[in-house]
Image (cartoon, rainbow, N blue to C red):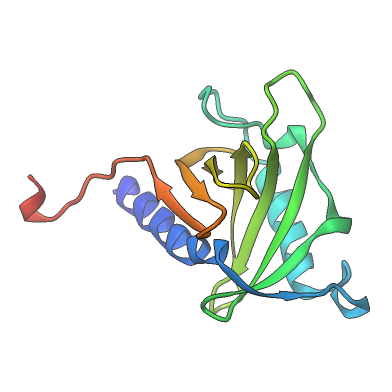
Length: 169
């Protein structure tokens, strides 16, 4: 039963945050968009709550405690659905592992104001051509991996999903 709820939660997260990879408008940070901005406050709370969770022992997951958000360089975008999305760069404090080119928090608020976020790890240059993109929950558990195309701003998942429809068996 928990598996069904977990899958539904991941599906909701993916359907809301995936479109946020396509940005149409950038909101320039002004005095009103500093760390007191409500979306930034919710992102800080979301990161603090998730980084306090236990570390996964799965080798494909990441330890969120090894990352520090760069709150001074956040960006707020309006995605294709007209929803504000915030991205916050993450700086790795422990350099024992191979570093990704760029890691960030991506977060939107649902219609009730609840934060829905993920950690995106670009392995390669996310600004030119195609690069591998690993997606993690806020606690560092990998839930998707695929190819991000910077030109078309699209993501193609490499994770094969099982369908529960009768025709899929």
